[in-house]
Amino acid sequence: MKAWEENIRKVVPYVPGEQPQEKDIIKLNTNENPYPPSPKVYEAHRNLEVDRFALYPDPAASRLVKGLEKYYGLQEGQVFVGVGSDDVLALAFLTFFNSDKPVLFPDVTYSFYPVWADVYRIPYECPPLDDNFCIRPEDYKRENGGIVIANPNAPTSLALERDVVEEIVAANPDVIVIVDEAYVDFGGETALPLLERYDNLLVVRTYSKSRSMAGMRIGFAMGNPELIKAMTDVKESINSYTMTMESIEVGAASLEDEDYFQEKLSKVIATRERAKDELRKREFTVLDSSTNFLFARPNQAEAQWLFEELKKEKIFVRHFTGERIKDYLRISVGTDQQMDCLLQAIDRILG
Image (cartoon, rainbow, N blue to C red):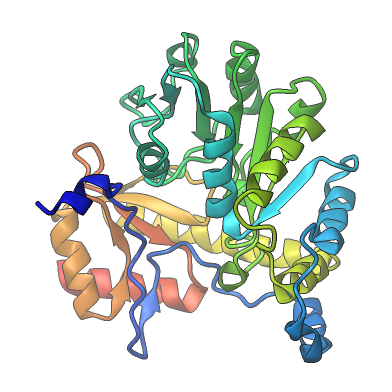
């Protein structure tokens, strides 16, 4: 080993879902929304003054922040925005988890959490989900340096009721509890009403799923102004200009079309429920989902094998190798036509 190699910070990185480049792919592996953004997003994009791209964007992303405060009924200073919820969560880890006590998050959850903990040298422990892939609140009522809960959870698709989340937050008044609500619009129960009662709660959301804007990289956190200021101070110590002019404008525009937003949510949910029923008819074990994906175990074949066979059919789903979930596939909800193609491919493969 060269001497300089001893000073390199080495971690095992997060592995995102595959992004195939060939055409005619049915892509059901990264939980993207199958429908386009609101027409108001198209309009805002057309009206962008490209000449202004020569200037730095507003470091406070004021138009977007004010739009989010209004949309969610929050006070000034309660919203933080970043480059996707991954950026927001990474900054939250860096800002709030600085003790020598372990941060707690489940053993089966968003696989970026342990990566951030490792890269920032944050100690952590992973209480196991129960046999039904559910959080046990009692596991989070011990000394810790912070808590992170994805609700609904990924990749399991299951959601906790708000009173269970509150039980965990209330039991941990001395640390920050982060609730990652990337999928909550698809049927989960948000923790936002708890912000009025708990100053240690941070709720994180993204535009990548329900708002059909994964490519714009817009995420945000909501909490009491002290938490938001702390995150802002850390962000501005690293990079003041995180949000582009483009993402600020189209992100704000998306909030102005509630009818379109609710219509597309309803379509995804209806397709999800139909696909869940169809997979169960094919002897899959499918968890009840509050997300835009299904967590399904094929009982007639190994999940890894079916994953590879579907790729041969140009249908991409997600398979994880973790011991507890290696028998499952995570299947993003596409259009009705895409889900029909998936089901037909499964019928051909399993014969």
